[in-house]
Length: 372
Image (cartoon, rainbow, N blue to C red; front, side):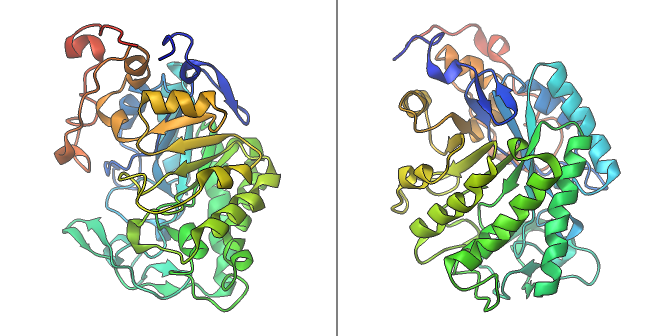
């Protein structure tokens, strides 16, 4: 194991316009604590500030419109009040020397009528109901049946991403991450199991990657390519989303967006939050189709992360669940300190308990002995 002080995991780097002091990325983590108006809660200022030594923080998924919401108490970034609330978060992260981007999210069919504007139902590329649950005031319930977006509506949805990116810059974010993973709207357009359209957004791979391309183009036009990342999950079964042949699909997806010169692509390897080997996929072949920085995610420990960066496969490694209970994760990795475990009963909803009250290393038991 390399000495922790010289390991490539802790060396500075760059993701587009964003200079990062290390290669440890905080992955987006939904926590369901938004206040009325879909505002990030006051506690989010401390929550994200505690984790500011990450090379980069990717915020929790944040909906780009009222129609983009799919879970109870998730924040938005589609109006000035939301941008103002997020500004308090970004100011604190920057005050502590950190960098943070917001993940732009539209859930598509993974929603429930109780979470949407009155009279609305979820929208999707095709009117195919997911075998999935979502979280409402009644607890976990089956998602509602969606309707297919009319082709005339699609430019308006793309403009929602454009507006959200503009507001993100007003809110002080260092950039945005377009959420094209985990079975949400963009992923639904990509996959033939959820996209059965017969117009210019359906059918072959070129048409199914069109919505992704147009969303990314809109964001790039608004804030610049070097402040835009994109997240994919080629083989996750999350939210009942599947494709008959994901390898050529996702190779073409990254190939289409590569010429923009994006800040990064962020890829979940395997099942989201689950096994890495749930389905065969050649991530290196996908990576070869993209010319920019690459963030790998899912199931990485320190040794795997160091090897991935040292080999040139990845430029940074994202850690998800570990960041919930370890606000000082970078230090713990550097010192080979034990990692605390998250309380799963407090992951979604609630207040400070299980959110901002996880102790740093000293309070958890003192400085750890280096083992590597």
